[in-house]
Image (cartoon, rainbow, N blue to C red):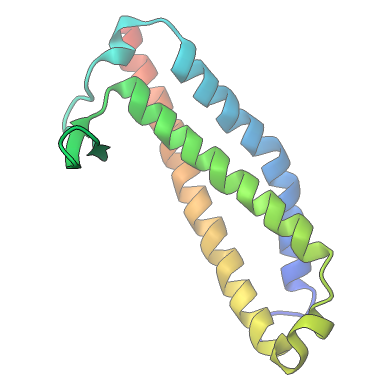
Amino acid sequence: MAFSGKFLSKISESIFQFMVFVVPFHLAALGAFATFERAGLDSNLEGANAEIRVWSNRDNGYFYKTLSLRQYASLLFGYLCTIGVLFIIVYIIANNVNFDYVAGDWYGKLHHIAVVLVIFFITHYAFLSVYSITFLFDKINKING
């Protein structure tokens, strides 16, 4: 086996402890961007337009709406908060499930799938967190001029 039997539980526990501290940071960044009064936050992003697909009840179809810096940052940090909270919930539930009973003979395969999913989550969350922090510093520096 490539990983020890305790790998998943040890890394999940470490990530859980990390998430307990990181999710409030993303929530604070979301609150700051959503409520902070600064003229540059309501302008469009420089470089390329950030767009989101939105449903219109009046036209009965989708259209693309250009996002302001405030909207883009709020969506980014809101997404990070959401997947962080989902990880915490899944961790709490998974720690209280008897997988030997639930999975039976599939326990070994389920363990490998869980390891891959945890590694994917770590990678996804890490890249997005680094992106969001560099994005935050870059845009704040440009706004402050």
